[in-house]
Amino acid sequence: MSELGTQKTSDGTVSRLLNVVESELQAGREKGDPTEKQLQIILEDAPLWQRFKEVTNEMIVTKNGRRMFPVLKISVTGLDPNAMYSLLLDFVPTDSHRWKYVNGEWVPAGKPEVSSHSCVYIHPDSPNFGAHWMKAPISFSKVKLTNKLNGGGQIMLNSLHKYEPQVHIVRVGGAHRMVMNCSFPETQFIAVTAYQNEEVSDLDER
Image (cartoon, rainbow, N blue to C red; front, side):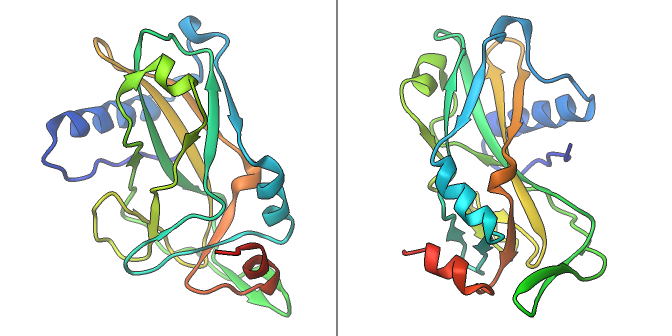
């Protein structure tokens, strides 16, 4: 489990929410909650993600930030329709080394860079009723990945490191609490400043 850090913001509510999430994760709270026993999160476009995983997915990071492809989309069921929730996204390192592309494949290449930051992306529809989150797939299409710490809701990642996106659902209003943390192995990727594998660039038809 990664540590969620707080972002500097003028919005005190957002700061308090992130502080709550951080304390919940540090406390090692178990996933799930008795009031949301049937909660399920499904990855949309799973076959597309699997195609990228088979060739070792790469995500472009730029100074100004670049949107993800594939776009992370999920469907959620089992929330309390009348309760308020916020959805957050962060990116967890999957291993303890850097990677490099050699002779057509990715191989481990030494120790990872020390990451002193831990950015969290708050879905712009947050907070909202459970009914809102469950009515249609939830898209994180506005997330931008960068290799420079420049704020603005962008996520800073270290190039040539492997990450796995992780979704957090937090029930807000009254006592804030973590409802679920969820990630999908097929969404793992290596952050790069330019595609290394032509098979990945061919799949990205933007």
